[in-house]
Length: 376
Image (tube, rainbow, N blue to C red):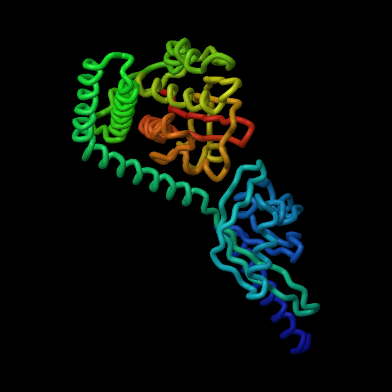
């Protein structure tokens, strides 16, 4: 063998080893990596990306067009239009979807690569799943809001109640001195009602500032719901269909009965208000098992749970409002129908019990709340 052949084989061997190291690096990376054409055809993907999106193999994912993993396919075109001229985009967050349709928030770093032979453009991207990070940030933000409301309540509640008590007492004295047909009588009654609403708002504020230990007990959620069935049916009102569906298996959880009752009352009242004319309200009780792939990023860890579902056929909640519904004082109701604390109280109770709550809604198609509480 000549020296030239020996050098050529050495170069080829070095190139092969370099390609193997490169492929091993890409396939062993913790982040998702892909290469695609301008029109979205996937040329290469690594195992991390397939796992991130819930596909069984790289080949299965590679058979898709990249537009198919975007929740809003037009967003890819907008990104190409915006960053295509610079040839690089770093730290762009977009919404993709997994194989089963569940959303996933990803952080993209993409660069344009041109093929030397023909100059065609392709894209190389690195993908990081930031869904859990964003969910944790949302939970922290929610917790900070709850703590702020608690501090506010503890600071002003008693003084505010004293003011309201003076107003209510003065109204009682005035009403005792006036005849029922006096022109001022309705106005004083309205002042008294306003003071009562203020006192009710203060009591709900204080629900956030509870410092004493919760007196939890082992109870069957089915028993609490069935004991309240008559009241809940009356709350739903005439013209609405009310139904409770449950299995035969007990659903034992650790909680205060009054906490579960408060959750039910708030959600049922909200459901009723969302159905101004007629509709159907359904309460379901069942046992579910979650694992790392089915548990919500903002919910509990994998395990067995008691699921309490309240579903209505009302007006629904717009997607852009769903992220705000658990915030204190946020409400879409008229001021005389709610103070924006009902769902915040529900959220704090569920989290205090070690569970999670998820809302599914679409305008005109009703709303569904799923509450998971750990079974004991």
